[in-house]
Amino acid sequence: MAPSPSPSPKTVVITVPTLILAVAGAVIFVFLLMSSSFSYSPPSCSCPTGSTVQTIRRQQISATPDDIRWLKSQIEVNGLHMQDNVLRKGINPRTRAQQLQDLIQYKGISHYEKEEEAKNHTSLPCPNELLVEEHHSNYGEPWAGGRDVFEFLAESSQLAPESRVLEIGCGTLRVGLHFIDYLAPEHFHCLERDELSLMAAFRYELPAHGLLQKRPLIVKGEAMEFERFGSGFEYDLIYASAVFLHMPDKLVWVGLERLVGRLKPLDGRIFVSHNVKFCSRLGGDECSKRLKSLGLEYMGKHTHDSLLFNHYEIWFEFRRSKL
Image 1 (cartoon, rainbow, N blue to C red):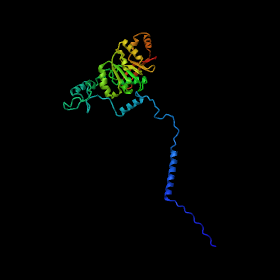
Image 2: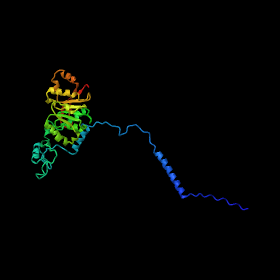
Image 3: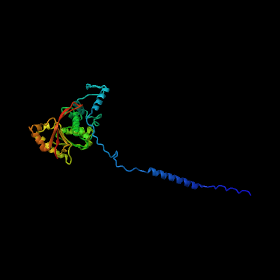
Image 4: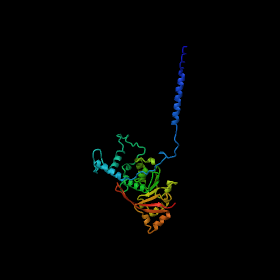
């Protein structure tokens, strides 16, 4: 008998549509698997991030020893020596009087050639006397000394940009400019009696230093009219630089009495320069008694010697001792 033939293996036929469906299913499976692994998010953390942490860092105010060394090195490396300020190529030294005459003769600082064109085109012309900075010579000492006063007072009072400052007699802003620049807008106040000084402050110094947007509150007055500055806040610093020297003692005491309630208790400071004869002239312990009756406490005498501008001053410090 002949052997029967072995059964042939079955052939699996996979159609093209089925293959496409299988591949598509595999791709979808892999995609879902990967999505689930990457969608995991760690538990939320309540730790402060860089955007929520506020680092309170006091700005540097005075020059440091490193700053002085750097300054000296730059002078040395450039081989600089002080020279006579004489006529030389591209430089024509003029006194303030000569500059003023030039401004008058040549119709301001215009470079127009024709008479009609030479008319002043500025929206608020500045007086010629201010343009030549005659007011910088009003103090009997270098204008740059204003920076020294600012540095001493700001650091002695531990001021921050958010602090509030009142100057009694800010003049042409020799000191005030630096406070206005450092402080937040509207945080510098001043009471000044001299009209020409105020014109120099408003018409020249503030615009020239780009400080109009700081909106300092500068008020013309001479009778210790501090209510004009408003209420609802306290000053961190109140100072008078060589101002009380020119006032009757009685008016100084009136001013102090009105200022006490405007000074921040304990941390706020009043600084008076040169001397406190309005106090010492009372004799004996009368000064301390009168200060105490106002709620003021004498904190001591300070001397400040400049690193850069040959400037030296004496300051007397007071604080508000009670609420």
